[in-house]
Image 1 (cartoon, rainbow, N blue to C red):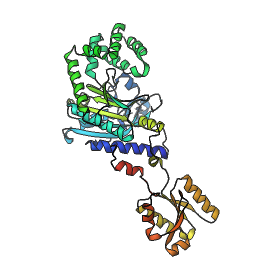
Image 2 (cartoon, rainbow, N blue to C red):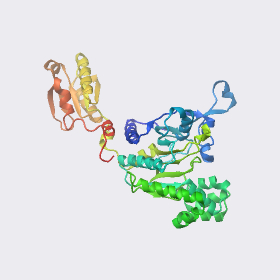
Image 3 (cartoon, helix red, strand yellow):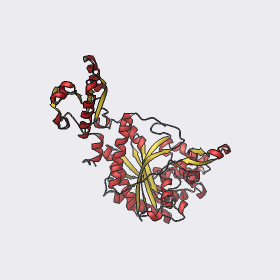
Image 4 (tube, helix red, strand yellow):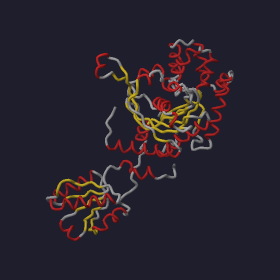
Length: 446
């Protein structure tokens, strides 16, 4: 859990705004849920390992002495969404599409790009079993990554029913399927041999473990195994449909069928997806979870979702120097100085006028009693990366002018007070594209 300094916050907000804008263009509506959920809402939804990472909250007040827990910090945004849909089904449209950008908490071991408190950027669609749902999600997250400057990403695609069919064909008993998927989900992280050891340690016969892992290395063998069952054949057709339709979207060329993809969460029931970047790992993932909402409502409602990991994206973009100077710019456009006690009100009025013209303005709070103090003000403006310094003394007030110094060129001139806003706002060296401008105006890359 971390503090975020100004530069961190600017970068985070830039990425969040890009994500938000793209999600809204795809018809997803905003939703927020509380940080805390009832403990029974979360437990049993994430599998054995997931349950161990939930931050539990002790009872308070009169129940504090019992040592019992009744609440928990949310582990993800999907289970709270399922609860919301179950509680508000009559108020929501037949096909409900929502996005949610909020923090979640996991009692995990911190690592590169992995934290105990982190933001997820989710999109989910409720109410349809059509493969168009998966395709639209893949397209949306692909467009987000492209807008942020990513080109070398792959959307890995698989299906839980294909994995079930493969495990059956390999001889893994149904009661061990969940354990097998937890182990298989670590294949890219720990490698073939350690996954085999994990499978055997979980009570899966070595011959069955070998058959599973061999299938991931031979697509023809994998296909032959899954097509032995009607379930596998149907899932294979679903994956093929998603891949074909994705070619008509911004995700074209990025989607790849990946048999080893398992996704460890236990609530997935259909297609599963993960964003992978070469040499980096996962930037997010998701899948279909048609049974989760029914755990709360008793009504089986189809659903599918995708989550982008904000923290991992920020880490990678920082390491690759993908943030523009406009995003990282911290300082004001203009630093307004206070010449003496008599001109404080005029300096404040000037600052208000400049802000009203769309400029970012900071007022230097100390009065300029000497040339040395003026030098300190200019030095401070330089450290703040200000573009201009405005000096407004009694003489300037009487003449109706403002002295403006361009810190990039060193040029200094007196500008009529009535035209100072337009003079600064329209100079090429004045305001560039601020982060807020970038995210509110579509670009060619999007």
